[in-house]
Image (cartoon, rainbow, N blue to C red; front, side):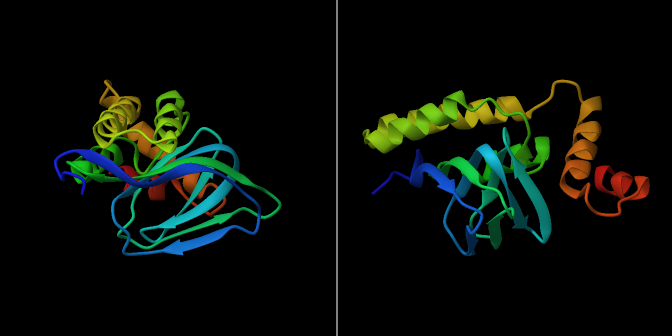
Length: 177
């Protein structure tokens, strides 16, 4: 019964996942924010492999196929939110344009406070405000005021995601445009 003009969530929480953790989903509703507290996992999204490490905020569209598995001999400790409503698709597009689907070195204070408040059970309007503030914080942290850095950030994110593969300068240039 959530008003479609305000933000809400379908799920949120804290998890500690062992090396056997594997999750595959598709056709979900909303967008997932996942912040890695510790450990590492591999995300396959839009036919690309991404590594999620401590300090990374990842945002993905849950309607698209995504596979998450904890790296061997590792764990993956996270906070997460599945966000719905309002202009979440547009905000996702801005986040993705700013930093891809992963913001490295993210300050999680607002996200953690939001998830913990949601887990305690608050009314849907207070939840909408907290989610909005968390989204604005994520967008603020993902943006750059120096447009010259956009290409550099895309290159860094590409190298970060594919450093174990045989990539070339030409591959990086194609990714950055």
